[in-house]
Image 1: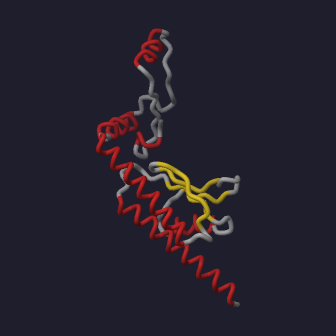
Image 2: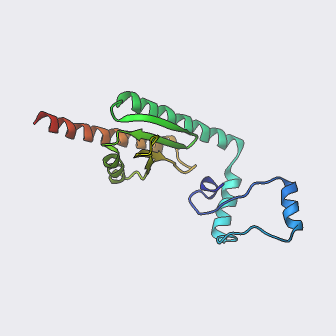
Image 3: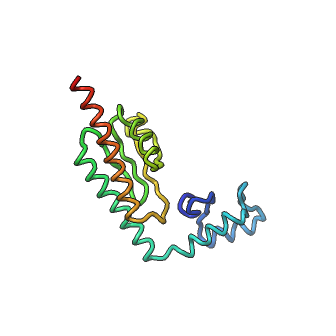
Length: 165
């Protein structure tokens, strides 16, 4: 595990049963990494683990459901742009029309929203990746989707201008 455990700070975590860890200790061979023991990373990881409670996990689940709902709402409003949605929790991919993908990605960056950009279902680079930190709130989610609509409408206006000439 890695991404969420450091809340933006690079760290990885190994999960295993007590029996497995005890067997590793008996061999006198330890698993280590270049960043092993980094005080900042370890402190961040401990802080995240102290924060994660069952209630917190439920809230993160609700945020994931909210992103899913907003993404599907966007797909209903812009079916010629949003082709496919996939994901779970706080990791989502929104596949958009291949001709618009790079434009949308770059415009979202201009709007102050950094998104991942990667391969879609058929190997074409057209998927916007939404992978926010655990501390994201519902207002932040709304802002992402408002800005996506602004960008979609900007592209729609430019396409309409081209067609009418």
